[in-house]
Length: 378
Length: 107
Image (tube, rainbow over all chains, first blue to last red):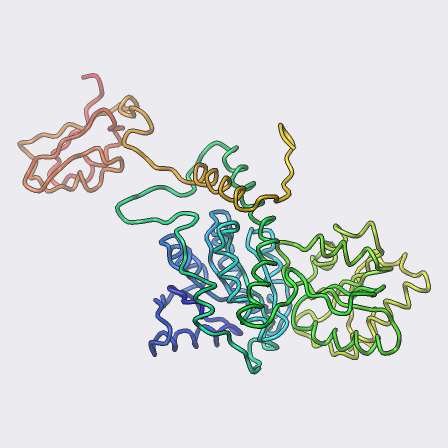
């Protein structure tokens, strides 16, 4: 749909299906792209980066260890503002060997300069990937974009999809422009040579500014997409029953679907609770978070990734923006792909509200790990 | 928001993006021109001298010179641009006939 021109990827569970299907489509002639077989993820991103430098629209996909294998190239691509799109099927990092979903892999690279988004369901994964090309290639942004989807829960789940019309997509997503620059044989130049250190800081400032501009571009693209596909999600965040919410849960990923069930159950019991689903971790939705916190008594951040020696990753980010305005509780759950069902969310959310109302939120400085097989939260 | 301390709140996205792109290209890309590092020939302590009686015009020295200061076309003798030759000695080392001698500079 996006008329990708170059794909280079290395298979890793649970991304293998993506790679295999794309290879099949290229083989059958359905996708007019060059598929480069590489021997590692580092080479995959290097090949895709090279293609992007040559002016092609390029795509790759990976997961956990594959993402870590291409770590060096991630930074290279983002700091040289190459508009690449990468699907990251989030998978636990070993040891132990674990193919199920948690969010450490994609969040571990949040400093790199990539725009990072996460889908809640298969339809959104499709929509986000298509939008990723439009956002990354926008001349006001020009950064690579990562689209996350939970392992197996999304990557191996079949859902009926609504696709926009190809002609509408072509009108909305034109062929790539030669930005920020394109290398041509015969007109050689050097990219990223050694220079005065001030040049480096200036380059980082450029990437920073692009990220700030990306916030508005993402919202615009979300609105544009509504016109061609009939769907929009709300931009950097999705607001679920937040209008009069006094208790706000913040999270991202597929498990938000179950959280919405829990929110509905608690709402029917009279609790004024809502969910702020983060769609883009980078650029981080500061303004949306501040707005949600302004009417709230307390916030609960559900993390599926924790920074060892500190606390849940989103909890740190949320607290840095609104920690001084509302009490924030952090619950770490679902690591290693442990399933958290909607009634477990009901239990977690209810406990959060009860703790606030009984004044126990003073104890919220430490993150709580939800491990129900041990007989209740610790 | 000027002088030493800078914050960025996007106002006019298109204009700011254009300015950022110009800066970005200026700082990230380098368009090298011949001799852009200056007269590196002054760095030499040893100088390669081609003895044409031994040279068989194979072009190996031209191929291996890391600074591209040797000019050669098939069927002709190579010639060295001493303004930029740094005297590294790779040409002398790869010459299959030993036709290039490294002599001390100034002799």
